[in-house]
Length: 207
Image (cartoon, rainbow, N blue to C red):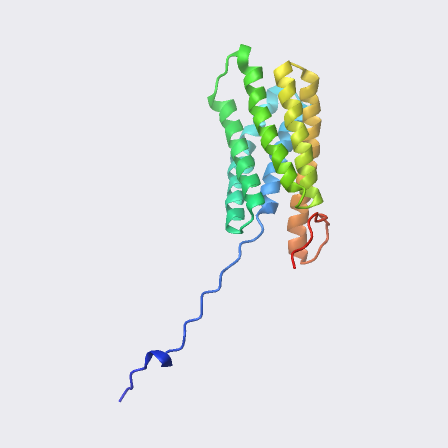
């Protein structure tokens, strides 16, 4: 005859182990770096402007959707800085794609309209640079270079100064190099399970 188990005799159910997300920074930085690099090569005047449309696919899929997804994963990882940064710049590239494909600005206002658009992104990037100063040296350098890139391009558009647009292109290439290094370090250090490529943390490690 079976004996019914009392509540005290029933073994407790172990809580389900949470499965941590991988670090999405490698993806977010890579998507940002590649899209920024390709566009900046055209801004710097290295290639004919007629071919700059090649950046549109990158802006939509890699710099945009993939980077936005990385931002969402950062929210799941409780990383507010990474979440705001990747989600915002993913949205930037999506808005850039929309600006070039679905918006027809009159020629007489286009420069100033794009200039204020870039100024707004420069302001956002500037205050994110303050927060980046407590992350690591690589990310901090990305944000410093990106802030300078936005303001150079913005002032160039507002003032009609083409040389500032070229300078912004060079600064954008530098930004992309820093971001690519950050992605390279994230993926390589995780894969090798040790620090192969240093990123130089700027904030003390929590105890």
